[in-house]
Image 1 (cartoon, one colour):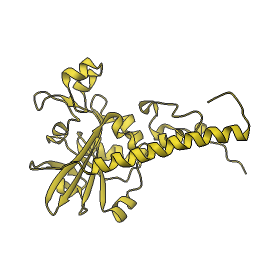
Image 2 (cartoon, one colour):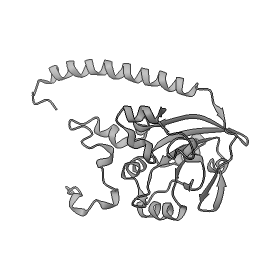
Image 3 (cartoon, helix red, strand yellow):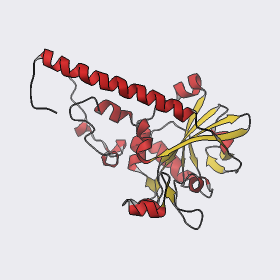
Image 4 (cartoon, one colour):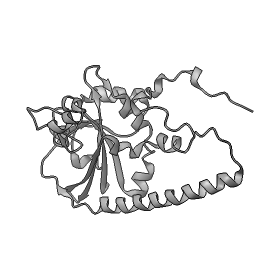
Length: 242
């Protein structure tokens, strides 16, 4: 934040100049979204098995009868047998699914490579309502490159192979689960994969950042620096003014 205090007119001149840039960015984002929607789909010919609250299900079941499916690939930290704080922050930012479900014929589901009983306990602890599914024992995470095991599939994350990841100094992705978003649509029982994004590309869901970007202090913390919401104590609660 600038320490210089100015007149209202000087502020307005600067604000209007910024508004022109905001409009240009918004127009570019809309054009990019149009190109994203125009990507040619890929038919999903491979069968996958997940476990959910009602037992074993297939990818088609994750749609819950709707025409579109957004999967959030949730990182499970196997070393501590718990959900990733960054992914948990992302889930805290996700919308109430009612508008997606009822008005947009779209299901948002969370998939993680952990045993379902672990996922269910963590979901309950965090108070989330989004549907959770386990891909444990399935190739799903490996085929969508959010889990890495060279005995199952070549290492790839964010469209980079192992050598590129290591060259770019982010080789740790070659040895762990990652996060991402994948989008599917269906024509009756035929499933089509239309889009996947990883890393910073998945921060589209971080509404907290969208609000903090409006403020002088900005984002303040990187995504993995936000604690799990159930660790916030009463000492952090704002005072109530009457």
